[in-house]
Structures are given as C-alpha cells and as structure tokens.
Length: 114
Length: 112
Image 1 (cartoon, each protein chain N blue to C red):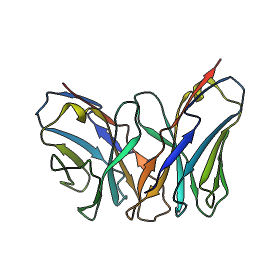
Image 2 (cartoon, one colour):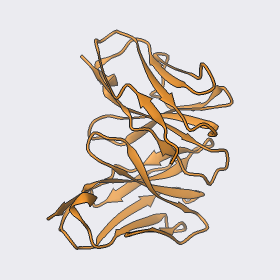
Image 3 (cartoon, rainbow over the protein chains, first blue to last red):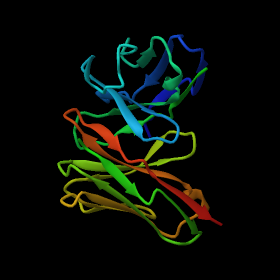
Image 4 (tube, helix red, strand yellow):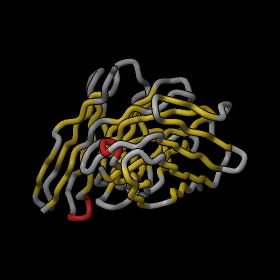
C-alpha cells in the first residue's frame, strides 16, 4: 500500500528558530496538503498545493509559513520564526487527480517549540 | 463554511458491544466522506471512503452509512475489541480545492 512519508517524527526547536518539515507524497498524486492538530483540538487545514503553486491557504498560513516542492518527490513546510503556539502535530496529505479519490495522510511530525 | 460535528465525543463500552459513531456536516454538497482512525499521538489512518452516490460502505467489521441530504454519516463497528480503542475522525471536502474539514472525533475505549 503506497504511503505518505514524513520526517522527522518529532522535532524540538527554540522559539524564533526556523524549522522545515519534510514529506514524500505518493508518487502519482497531484494534490498535496499540510494540516495541523494542536493537542486536544480538531485537525485544521493549512495549505493546498497543486501544479507547483499554492492553490488555497487558511488564515493560519501567514507569512511565517511557506511550502515548496523542490524536486519531483519532496514537499516541505517551512516555519520561518517559530512561536510557542506553533507547537502541534503537522500532517502532510496527498490525493490523486480524480475528485472522488480519498486522501492519504502521513504519520505526522510532532513539533514542540520551547 | 463546512462544519463537522461528531457525537458522542467520548464513549466506553465493554468488549463485544457494537459501536455507533455519529457525524453531521452542515453543507451537503459533498462528493465523498472519509472516516479515519487516530491512535494517541499518531497519524491518521483511512478506514472507509464513502462516495456521495453510495448509501454505505463496508470493510470487515466496519460499516459506514451516508445520508447526504440530511448531512449525516454513521460509523458502525461490530463486536468491538480492545484494539478498536482510538479516536475516530470524520472528514468531508470543503472549499473549491477540496481541502478536508474534520470533526473533533469520537474517542472510543473498549474495556476488556
């Protein structure tokens, strides 16, 4: 069964530092997403990416956040200057082109900002 | 704006009982609904994807029904086992690019 792979599984960083979360989506998928889940809260949409550009972003996804697909396989989320409130589980997801296809999620990166 | 609500928020049942988890959503213009399982501190595992044209979808002991017009889905888990203890999340597409809107989950504990 194809998987979405995320690294690292856990990252601890100091407030104000930059972090890059990495994802390898399923190879023939075309839509890529980042979601986050603060402890005890709902999974929230951050950004969607299609055809090498952002197709939609939420109000959470401010100028501190950026995404990139630097090559044919990786999809990254960068947080430029982390805040305490960025501590959360970050999930990458991908799906195929046909709208009826479901989403496949990675196992997540737990980001702790201290 | 698509809002997803899951009831009950938490439940504990003895092993062997059937589980009934409810999900409701406000915008019925969806083309599918997906149920996920989440273990504590872990990722999201897709359980069932039910298309808007379907009334139900089954996988082993799991059965999901969808009543699109009334904005409801139910996940049934037959003959629960302790290994079914987890949080079950319901998600529906929202917005033009089909991002998902999630409920807060049904947290299930199956007591041996």
